[in-house]
Image (tube, rainbow, N blue to C red; front, top):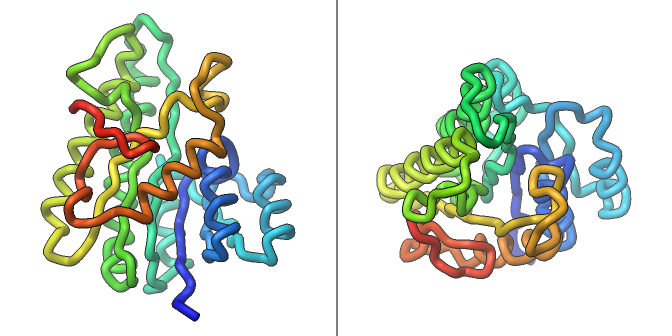
Length: 230
């Protein structure tokens, strides 16, 4: 029997994060499911119970550097095969810029994944698979930009740039970087109009992650494997 895969997922208590946890638990991976309020993560707790205790639920507020450091202290040097930066927010009014909200959106969506990647770099490098993943959005595509949502679009474009750069800078360490657009998913953030359910998106995302290679590292693609325009 092969070595058990360890997956760390941020924002794993709802939406795409929860669906990803469900997919990996079904594949008998060990899932480190992080979220801001583990005590209120009832669906994660139920998944843990139904999956034979494959889910380790740990606190993480990605906007708080002390919280990131605390998670690192908890996990120590444990190898992490797949690190999925999934947590995200969209707090801005659609058609205007509110400075305080803009800063929160940038911190969670663009800065936090970079800080988390930096913090857990040694855990990735010390693992078997060495896969760093960012759940981005087609709204991060500069060439297709339209329809307001300024802060969210800017943050996802910044995330794409950061992860693309890491795919080059960390290549010599064998780290593979997935920059994955999940599609327009039926979540609280996605709203009532959507193309794909969280489980359908997560199934595709997991497949893309399993296929990550030096050729696809740093490629902006969606959950189906279709390349997205920068």
